[in-house]
Image (cartoon, rainbow, N blue to C red; front, top):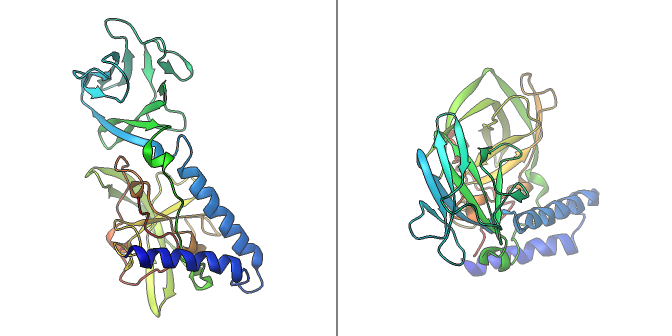
Length: 305
């Protein structure tokens, strides 16, 4: 399987190098796609990218000590045996509490010396803790809360050797029919750690491929966003591509989510979910409607660690 995957990667490179006009005369598309793939790899390998994630520590209600001491509720990587602080989980939110000996001098919270305060969970600017090469912040999944831990010196990040892709294929750049539901469906989205979160399905994208009519459901957290996420499993999953799923991020349909229209699905941009790169991600699993029998031999190949 490794040899076959490597061969496919070589073919992908040749498609760019030898046949930049594979999409008719639109050589700019191949260039744009190549640039997007480069930026996708760069995002994964940044100090705060998915390859730097080294922990997912679930918090219990009440006081959770954290640090490098063996007795801490959340034990983090680092030198010595020190209590760094306490995270108090209550019904009204999270709060940072000082340990008996005070906060370590080099523990920073949002760029400042640590002090007792409320902790912002998730969102665009969650409260961020930093000590040495470690950064961590709180996330909420369903009714549970965890600390996501990153290390800028993580072996997976330092040993990153790039991504592999199928060759670009113009037949997989599809303008699909967008069919909105009468009212968006509220659904439970299962993830790889067995927790369900709420989401909305505003409609379906319908198109033909390999002589089959396919319908795919995207999920959104709200109707006010400007993008959609399709979580897809197909006949390549577990073979040449990541077993659980791949992601396809798209723009909105041409007439918005609530009206019939068209939507561009470029499967050349199918990408691996974060859980392909770290065991500490909480990736959503595809709904039954998005588990396809056809093989989408396009987009990102399985990542070999």
